[in-house]
Length: 268
Length: 309
Image (tube, each protein chain N blue to C red):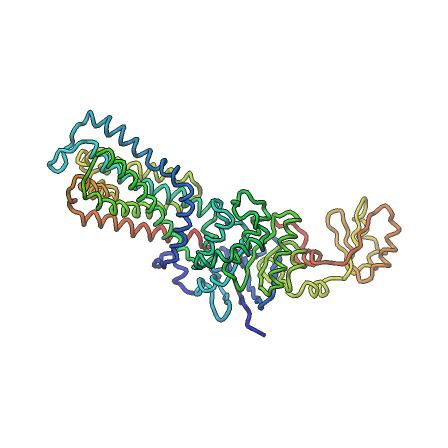
């Protein structure tokens, strides 16, 4: 028997077989799109309204790279990254876990000629698609509110898809490890919530103590914010390559780890 | 004689110290229904999982069709298999028809082809009137039949059914059996695990008796009974029945005596003298019947309870 098959760390074997799995999720979502849309954009908009207009009135302008920026714009450009993160994470944790563990949908799929690797890829891309959908809706609202009219938002859009991909890969690691839904609370409490506060969404990272800042600068959400925020202000991001590489590194490593752990979970 | 559709050779699976499948070999010929019977924990489901490439054997090989090997050719093999797992994996968010459509897509079938097949499959599963119902609105038997219809979406060469009627009421079970009979009459080939002996007797051309991961008997239901059992059984039960097992006059009339709970089983080739002798105990109740697969199963695997685990 081949060692390659035994090794959970073997290179991903990906093919276009992910597509019918993605379509399956799309078909379910079509039936529930409107309520799911409300859920996806209501919360980020509440953050924006409460903090942007409420806190923004107190804060006024924020200085960013020598430029004075209204707080609502500062917050909107950061929180949209958080929305991409949250949308991808929820889908790749709770929804993927339902399909994988509760409904046994994956088991059914794997009785057809579809490999586990392709199922994981489909779930990953699906969660990223959900993030893109959420982000698109929020961008629409932000445009309507006149928060930003930067033409570079067109570039922010695919970048946010990339952010969704990164965070869906990371969430799939925890999906692979979970025994139940309760486990996901750890991921939120220990990883996502601290990251939300350290990545410069609500306040600039230079407010952080130097040691914390040194770590915070390399968080994937920081990279996302540093890429997306300037685009909202009609500027090109600095160190775009570095930020892109940070996101790419988190994506590749996370996907590989998630795949290995999922293979381990399904190996009997 | 054409080549077997599936041949399993010297398969071994261990979990730690425990060997759950031990040097198991069998094959399925075209048009055949092979039944694997055995108590809980005998290794039936593990065997199916290895046959599907979902679990890696520690030794041995699983081959299909014309030289395809599991797991190397898993996708090519699965394209030609139909699987009904022990637990339904139907999509709760989809209607019966959508379940078939979505599953057909996993095989890379064009929607046009799948949509052509759906009405016939729903009709076969006696679910035409439920095409737009979701699994939550279907009974247990309907869900199983929908799972069977789903397994047929790719017009498979071989069906693997893991306990297809477990948990169904008698009516639903009979309908399922009848559907499987139809498939066999069409010349389909089936591998079936079950712990219902009447199911095995009705459907299977050949049986494999599995216990503790080993094959302990193999043959047609009729041959197995003839080989391992006396043709007739007299069951005696009621107050004081168990004491009869020690009765010398009866012992000489029976070929074999078994006691289970409050019942004594006299296995015999000629029941008349035994029945006549039992007239001396008019208070006891007797049941005279031909021996069946259940007797065989209990003889081979014992009467003690096997808890899951």
